[in-house]
Image (tube, rainbow, N blue to C red; front, side):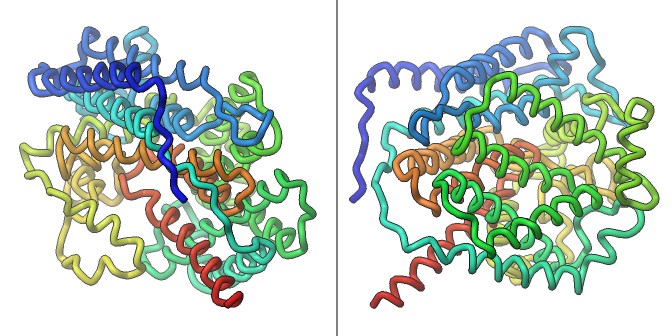
Length: 472
């Protein structure tokens, strides 16, 4: 039975909530009236707001496993990547470490829209944290009974093996040969298989964490699945798909230091340093004429020669998209009023997008809108998008509040479920999927995580239905 857990310090929470809503109102007024350019009197208060949320989150570990507090949480990982994309370039500029207009990819970096971008990003983080901290007043805290989990490894192994085999028979040769061309092969079927392999590798790592946390013997199905998963991670590095690799790494590493062993602050700092270094190495290696271990090795030895600063490389492209969108919508395009979100969420059902999207439609993602606006209609590569711009093209500033609020609420809902059901394989796997995907969500469209989340829930629902039917 579901119970509503009412927070006894409700009056204090109401005051805190009211304060955040007032800040959002001020941000909205400033967003409408702010002048062009990058103004320290606008950026510094926004940075202080972010730092306040980040520091308080860092000081509030959660307890999922008894006696094992962890600082690796959905909100903290979300804010780390959020900071790299939406705040770090401005912080460096304010301290005199770099210029805002630098880019090795585009000529116009839309610095004139910096004030609007920082205000919208700050509205996004406030809204996310309102959802994460205040919707928890009505947490769903029921303890659930699940189907027996001893056969989950069998199901996962079968799915992983079948999809990996299909991948080797279809898209392998094109994706892993020649210079980097992205993880998109151009074929919906091959892209779908690639996605499914990565998805089930995530589940394998999460199931492994469950076995380790429960001190259970790892069976042969899980051992073979783990060997396949490690091989897949190595292939991702060779391919240059560092974002998928890091999602998988976060699922495993974040899970290990949440459910198995405690990590100290120095350990977290070291992990961040290693992650950024690896990210930079793969960015260099994937530009080689032929990819492989040799290209990665050469990238390690030549990092100082070929690497771009963090404010000039591919992270900076996302920062540019967070500014450019305000020059395009609504001046050059009307708000899309949910069209981009409908198309994105339709991806939950395979091949469904093609049923209601005209093939001649040039704008089916926010990346299409931004890339054409910045690089022109004949661009040979995509500049990408980000979660704030993706929301803005549909619903404007007000949409940022509601959708980021909902996103924060979704995070705390899953967190509350695993806290109340720490021995549930289902909720552990779902929680780790959320942890990995939310960590990189700031760099992608709003619907970035919906397929993984929906299909994970569907997998466990189907598994439980199977055993319920068998029991009857």
